[in-house]
Length: 83
Image (cartoon, rainbow, N blue to C red; front, top):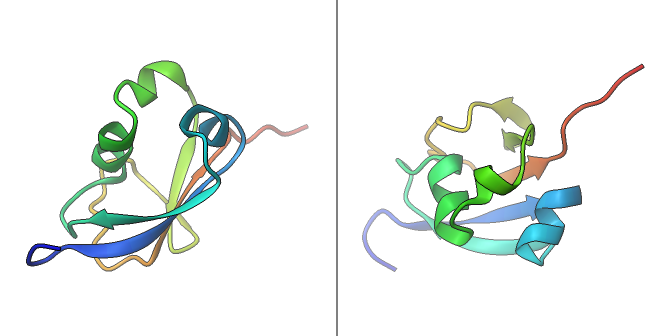
């Protein structure tokens, strides 16, 4: 682990879980890295394969381009549908 890197828990649901092949994993990240960069590193072309997925850091929805900072958990969630 290099200076500044830390481990967060990555949780995947629905299509994201099927695409990456796991439900939960510990992932090494840098605080300035964004969820978009992390997912593209783990699965190049991720955003070309899935549309409408959302991301949360520590149970709060956020932008794919927010740095993960000191978050302990990142979750990739299916699109919200309602009725």
